[in-house]
Length: 154
Image (cartoon, rainbow, N blue to C red):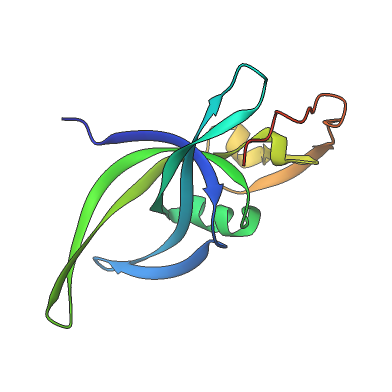
C-alpha cells in the first residue's frame, strides 16, 4: 500500500515556522493546516460541495522558510507528499493524527496577482551549488481577463 498523497485545498491558518534538532543539526520546519475539498461540477455550471477533510502538512528545510514567507491563510495550494500516522500520549490518553510530509507545495495561480522570478546567482550558474538567488524580474499577469465566476470553488 502506497502512502503517497496528492491533493488541492485551502490553507486554514498562517504557516508556523519552528526549529527542531535532528541529530546534531538544527532544521527549519513549517506546519500548515489545509482543508482538502472536493467540488463536484453540476450541469448548470455551478459546483456542489462533495465534502473534504483537514490535514496537518509539514514542510522541511529552506522550503519551510519560503512557505512561511509566501503563503498565507486562505491560499489555494496543491500538495504532494507522504502520509504518516503520528501517535502520542496526552495525559494518559492515547492520541493519533494522520499527517502529510510535503515533497512539493505550489500555489494555485488563480490566487496570484503577481509573480517574482528568482535567477540563480553567478556561482550557481558556474556549476557550484548555492541556494541563494538574485531577483531577475517581476511578471504581473493580467488574470482578470481570464477569470470567471466558476474558476474559484472555495
